Length: 88
Image (cartoon, rainbow, N blue to C red; front, side, top):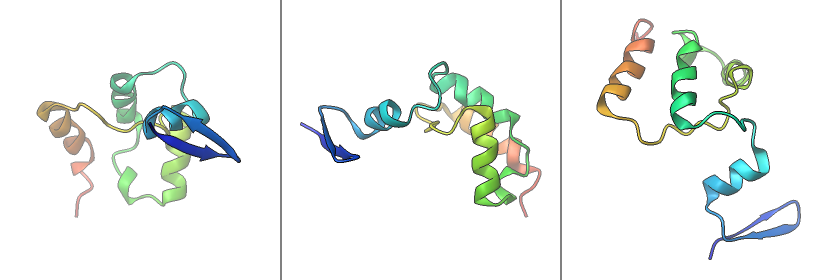
């Protein structure tokens, strides 16, 4: 059994990811796949930006809780290609 503490409360029986989503759910409407697709609305220089700006962008897009699970090789290549333009 998983037990986590949040705000002095003990929460039982949920994985860390599920607990995070239940406590901090920023996105009630998109699943992992939809958040993956939404991530391509980030600027291609996203990883060159400050952490604060990255957070602001992800908040605006509604993907703060995107984890990136179950990506295929093609998904990974597409993701890398989107940002490759700005690799040094």
